[in-house]
Image 1: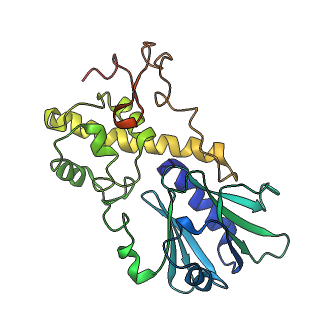
Image 2: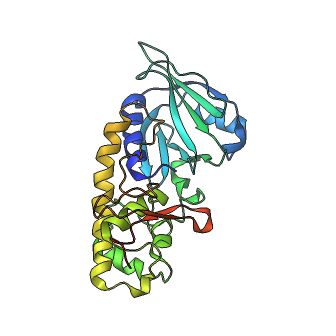
Image 3: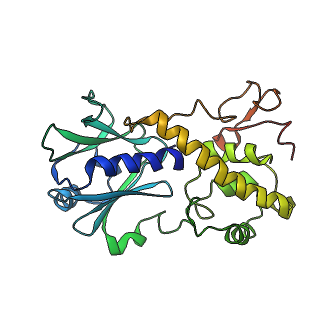
Length: 275
C-alpha cells in the first residue's frame, strides 16, 4: 500500500509534469474502480486542465481548472505509471483501469492508473463537495499536517484504548500511515506494536509522536531519491524492520520477528521493542 513517503513524492512529480496541461483523451479500460458513470467521468475530465496534484492522507487529489477534483484512493495495489514522457514508453499493463493523455508540445504525455486487485476507488467531484468523498471525509488530520501539534496528537490518542499499531493505521485517528510505516514508527519509538495504548506513559506517548515525524521525514527523502520520475515504484528495501522477518535488527542484531494477525504482516524487534 502506498503511504505518505511515496505518495508525497508522486504528487510532486505529477504536479511538475501535468500542471497547466489539458486532458486531450480518456480511455477507460476497467471502470470497476471508478465511482461514477463512465460517461460522466469522461465528460467531466475531457478538456480539463490540471492545476495541481495534492496528497491528503493516502489520497491523490487532482485539482482542475473546472473547480473539480479527481480523487484517487489507490488502496493496496493501485498506482500511476507514465505512458510516455520522463521515463520513455512503457508497455501496456493488463490491469490498467484508465488512461489520461495530456497536451504536450514535444512528446506524447500520459498516465495510466493500474490496480492489480481492483481495490482502489476513484471519484470526480466538485471541489466544494470534496468532503463527501467516502473515507476522505472521515479521516483525521494528516500525519504531516503542521497543525497536528504534540498537544493535538495526545488529545486524539486519548480516545483510543486498543493496541498502538491499530491506532496508527486507523485513518480516523491519523491519516496517511499504513502497515509498513507503522512498523517503522514503532521501531523508532521502541514500542511493541501490540502494546495497549492505555499502558503508555506520557513520556512514551510523546516519543511516539516524535518517532512518527522523524520516521516519515527520513523515509520521504529516501523514497523520493529512489522513485525519481518512476512514479509506479514503491521502494521499501531501505526500511529497518518491515518485511525483514528473520534478518538481524539494525540496532541490536537480534532476529526481527514477524507475525500476521488478521492477515496483516507486523514486523518488530522483541529486544528493542520489549513493551
